[in-house]
Amino acid sequence: MRLGSRFDRSMLGTVFTLAWPTMLEQLTQTAVQYIDTAMVGALGTQATAAVGATGTVNWMIGSIVSAVGIGFLAFIARQIGAGHPERARQASAQACLVTLILGTVLTAVTMLSARQVPVWMQVDPEIRDLAARYFLIIYLPMLFRTSSILLGTVLRSAGDTRTPMRIGMIVNGMNMILNFLLIFPSRTVSVLNLSITLPGAGLGVEGAAWASAVSFIYGGAAMIRALWKHPVISPKGQSFRPEGSILRPCFRVAVPNLAQRFATSFGYVVFASMINGLGGISTAAHTIANTVESLFYIPGWGMQTAAATLSGNAYGAKDHERLKKLGGTILPLEVGLMIVSGALLFLFAEPLVRLFSRDESVIRLGVTVLRMVAVSEPFYGIPIVVEGLMQGVGKTTAPFVYNVIGMWVVRILGTWICTRFLGLGLVAAWGCMIGHNLLLFVFFVFHYFTGRWDPFAGRKTLREE
Image (cartoon, rainbow, N blue to C red):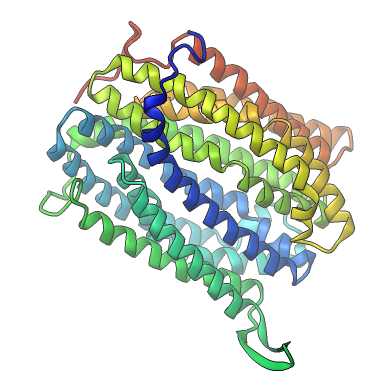
């Protein structure tokens, strides 16, 4: 199967209709993350390190919720594609039940472990207390964060990517305003010979945490309301008691994805703990570089959302031709977008890093690793989209295997050898990260071109529910 053999221009409108709201949502979220990091960075390198030191734990916990959401996305997208809207609404109610249970459990776990997380992450003892307080505050509203992530995925499974986008933009705007009010103390600035007093609570890093927490509460509540009022998949009137005929197929998809995300996210935690062990400059440079890089992954995540929803619809409708055209259309589009993205990252790495730090050592190190990873951006775009295609049709086992091998054999073991035995630093660690991404490229390209991702290609498929 050649990459462009089934390119279908008529599908581009549908793909972009689903992808652009997710891209815009991610863009505004990244913009707020940029502003947040810049504001905290103004407090000094230690403040940046305290916020970033537990960031990978944040990714791990969020990925658990996202993985469960993928199970519901695959099920609901198939039911809508097959013309079974009542079944989709029943699944929406089950998603609400799972949100309540999972959010409550994660709240308890994060609250009980808040003091120990910075210790496990090998955070510098001087900033452990600050990092622990930051972690505790941002996880107080974990039930609302779970609602926002999981129920937002349910909305996207029905082709509604605009509602999560609108809610996300409000959340991000609220977070930005609260950051401004809570991080810095009250101060007077001069504008056109006028002295203006700007209010502020002067809470520093803890102010950034409270800004995020309040925003999360709004986001979760708004997502619940949006789902409840949705014309297609509202759970209103449905049973909220556990329903095995829905939960079983959802979790058959979710469990491998959950295992993958937990294994890879835990790998990010281990990776970050090794980076933290390199000292404050490496931790700050790593945190800033991750923040900068996140902007340039946006085309990938937008296309993955479109790929997952549309492949699930095609699979539910048993439309093999549409499924093949989707793969042949979205992959070359993604490669082109990521080539542009990587080129921009390479060119603007230095001015972007300077937005977040005045420390020349941090700036030099951050720019170096960003320009390294910029070259690999196009290669990483393909695994993102192929994985989205596979999520939509419920094939999540192979991505689990591929991601675990890449994370633990290449990134973690490689970084451990480079930093512990060879005495190398952040540049070598990011080299291992790039190696991980390139290995995923090889695995997923092989999987795609051999047709192993295609549920209609004569292989065992998921049992239709």
